[in-house]
Amino acid sequence: MRAVMHQLLTDGIAPELTAVDRLFERELESDLACVNQLTRYVSRFRGKMLRPTLVLLCGKATGTLTPAHITVATVVEMVHMATLVHDDVLDEADMRRRGATINHLKGNEAAVMLGDYLISHSYHLCSSLNDQFAARVISKTTNQVCEGELLQLSNRDNLELDEETYITIISRKTASLIAASCYLGARLSGADETTCRKLEKFGLSLGIAFQIQDDILDLIGDPSEVGKTLGIDVEKRKLTLPIIHFLRSAPPEHQDLCRSLLQENGAAERIRNLLIPSDSIAYAKDRSKRLVERAKQCIADLPDSESKQTLLMMAEYTVTRNQ
Image (spheres, rainbow, N blue to C red):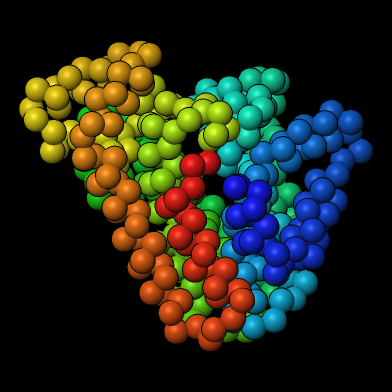
């Protein structure tokens, strides 16, 4: 199912995505074998290629694709890969895309440096564009990603975390790069600023919905389907939307039990069993679905095209996926 859906979403931009793959590999090529070994391995993590796909689809939906689209699509993928490598260090994760993480294989030092290597190459590549506007957008967005991560870290163990702060965290940490991908895709096709901003809002809503779904899967997903270490949020005492809702709406005795379990190590399964019979998972899913509807509304005025229909399909898939 996943392969079929990926093909449906990328059929119209297959040659451009191939060009992104080639540029990604070419840009990261080193004369040091140890570096090439790591960059080749981390390429295994590039599963959905959501951000490059959005750059290209938003470009096609608003105009004509250019070589700059290929460059920016590669840049946002590099930035995203860097955040994944760094996240695995912070979360002490052992598995991603059904394989061992860099930090598990090579240690935190190598993983941190590889993340830095990906970031530095993303800016090196972005600086090759004649217009530095994209570089400024990417750098601002990367700052927001780091701010979101720092805000999340500062709220570890905060069992009173509210929904508004949670949304702020994921808006910066996850959704900001997705929003920038959509905005730049339209901008590079020559779309007017109003249209670019609508695409940016599409990406922001889509990105928040995407992260809520990820957080749901971290709680109740099947590890063999999701393909990465699950239960990390609970183990790291990072509250996500289902737990936030449960702690404010469940019967008091269940709230107390959940708070107690969050203070224990290895309690992810017990918390999962506590949440499943509640309406907290459904609440998070409903919030995600409403965000998808908002995203679809943002592009309703775009001329009808294959790319627009693919964007709408992608929005729907965000909340139905199990990976």
